Amino acid sequence: MTLSRALSPLVTCLLIAAIATPALAADPAPSSALGATPNPANTEHESEGALLKAKGDALFRARNYLDAVAVYEQAYAASADPRVLYNQARALQALGRYGDALGVLTRFTNAAPPDLAAQLNGLDALLADLRARVCEVVVHVNEPGARVTFKDRVLGITPLSGPLLLEAGQGSLRVVKDGYFAFTREVTLRGGGSASFDVTLGSTERHARLVARSHVQGALISVDGRKLAQAPIETMLLPGPHRILAHREGYADASTQVIVDAGQSRVIDLDPIEQHPLLAQWWFWTGVGVVAAAGSTAAVLIAREHRAASDGNFSPSAISAPLGRF
Image (cartoon, rainbow, N blue to C red; front, side, top):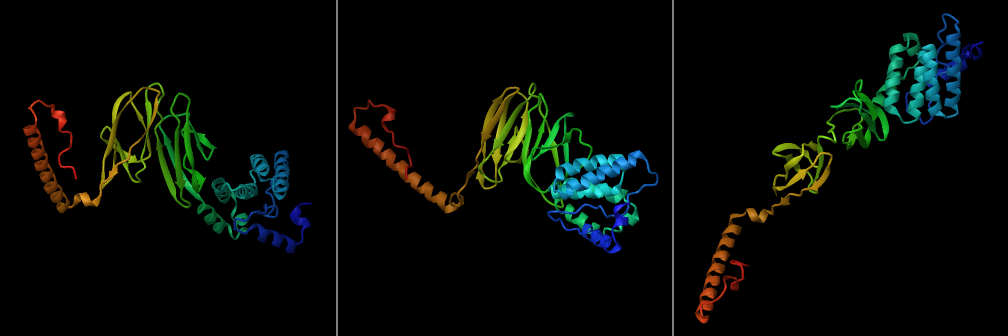
């Protein structure tokens, strides 16, 4: 006797209403009462799927969501029962893996027959809530076979199959491959939005890695005259000398030259110097010119008096005071 037959119609309706709640509750309920399991032919394979689903539901109710997700995977592979996808999505939701939950719940909406989906009156609201919690991310990497991680969670091996649904927030995007410099960047993903990252991995045998930083917010970094992005930046360089420049409007540029070897990692800090508004005033420079001229005249007079009192044999270094000091 199935569970739906054993329950009274009133209890069944109450269970369906509880399951259909779209809010991201801390303890969502599995869909054990969400329609009858499709069973056109009572095969051994389908029986195995039903047993695995029941095991997953038991783990779910015990709040062992991680193991429930794994068992639901097996259950769906055995039975292709859409209800398993719904339960798996709710388990992922309880784990805070909203991106995975949205992906599985989308599969449920594509696989569930209309009469089954109709039992979840809040399904659209649940989908919208999950979408607001994730960001669609595209990662392009120039090398195949690289491992991509976000917040220390493995997302896949390049080339990635398509966009990734990741939980909104801040974390480290990292791409690594043997024989190449690792790529690491702190990124902030916006909920309900999208982001794209183009990653260029450089070979440790052919390239050097340069990280240019600046304490001046908004400083734009250029390498060999090629503008890159705002600091901090990470770029791959061929061995040899390179000119690095940091620029910001209203500041004096800061630049340096570096010489790098293959396999080397260099980190440099370049801080443009703010130009004080006082230096841009015409009257300031006019005043400086007057003072400088007066100082030069005084210095000449001092020099003449000094020569008159001497025998004419003195080193030019004897007049050490700088001209125009004020």
